[in-house]
Image 1 (cartoon, one colour):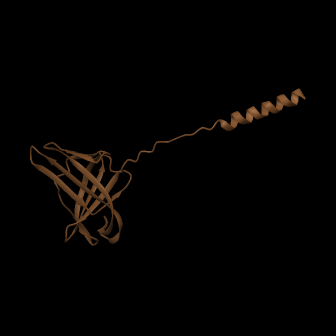
Image 2: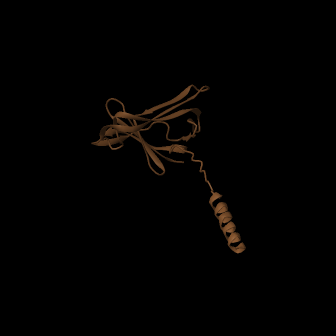
Image 3: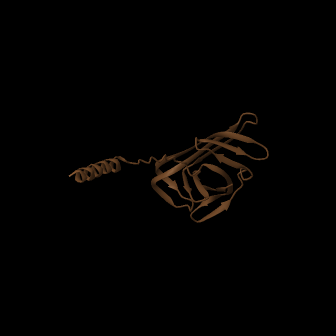
Amino acid sequence: MKSILRLSTLAILSAFFFSSCVKEVTVAVTTESPITGSWVLNSAAEGDSKGWSPFYTGLENGVFTMYNNGSVRYDDADVSMSGQWYITTTTGAFFDEYGSYYNDTHQALQLHLSDPYTHSAIDLNFDNVDFYNSSFVATYFNGTLIERYSFGRY
């Protein structure tokens, strides 16, 4: 009888200890925007679905560095500017990088930078932005043609 009592006590205690051992794992998830990092402007063009003509913006020789807190820096050989970037999800009309027209939900990108010493400024307000692995393409309709800016990782 004592051996049955010992075995039952051992079984109850074992069940208690094993059932009370619960491991909880909490994973901290930080969301980082796909724009975070350093970028160079690879090309700019204007046109529509029928064709594109490249143009020079003056920003091709610099590096844009976007931070996760929404701040941005632009540096080239002549100037350093700082400011803010914003990505918003919006619904409305826009043109994609191929010149196709859509009226749907999409992301828009704004970059606002300035240098108080040289009074230089960069204000880019893109109607649409699409992100890929190591690049992004942003478009803006200027009232006549679509402007397309292609950026690559630096």
